[in-house]
Image (cartoon, rainbow, N blue to C red):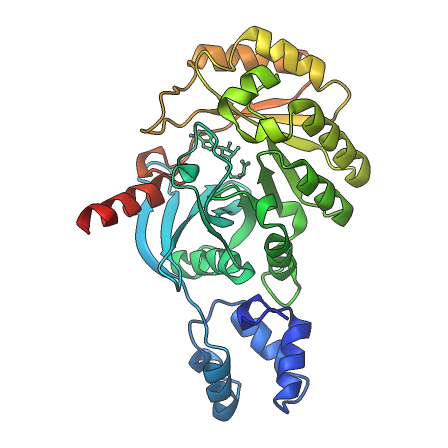
Length: 347
Ligand code: SAH
């Protein structure tokens, strides 16, 4: 059993309360409070004081602290940098769309995938996040901002399929009826392409959207920007996407960061069309967010438009992602990176 009460299912909480001699109805009370984002057992006002004291002693709550909060003046995007109980930091971004409020959460502290364009991976992987540490990002973003969260994307720091079991447990918690009850259809999970993880996920037949960070049409190009491609080359990755579609019936959403002179030529678009033939897909074109440490630059507007048109004409729906929060370092790992650099300069 997971020893942190905030990572437990309602069934597990019910077992622990039973062991403490509590009546059955208490588990729903405790679970509901935890999933409202209370900061202490003291707030669980319908529990007897004696029980609150025992829980406090045996299962202390871990609540993330806001160390930085930045709000975009342009579009209302809010970025949080949280400090976890062990002093590590992760980022969460709240984005406001016409269909509701969406949070982009981190799944690991750092990342070991080494993508050339990404700020999250520069310091490597520190540790995976526990299920409750993912849940708390959603809960406390909602509590702090006062904005109801209806959508989640697992696209922050870390590789979700590299932290498979904890991510699955998080999904179960956030989707639960007495919890936040966020529909799987409102959740997207993004991966750099860990093939065994995609196959494991397919077995679960979840209704979530799988996003695959493709970023290149060939191994030749992908190898230069994504080290993971050496382990799982594009042919294996696209085969896994086809299996995923067959198992789940869910269309794959591909991420494609447009990088000037690297992957944005008309030839690249044509190769993509050939390789994705017959696979129901959607292409998300994202103008690269420039990261200080990297020589890679975003594609021109013209290149993005031409690329999009070629894909659409070839039968692949392609949208250009609006960049939100560009004035607040809102892209992957940039805020944590700045903060940890500032801290180490102080030392
Ligand atoms: N590890 C997962 C999820 C986290 S990254 C994955 O790789 O999919 C979320 C998305 O942001 C990925 O598509 C990633 O490739 C993309 N990304 C990272 N850095 C970026 C940057 N500087 N500009 C544009 N997209 C970026």
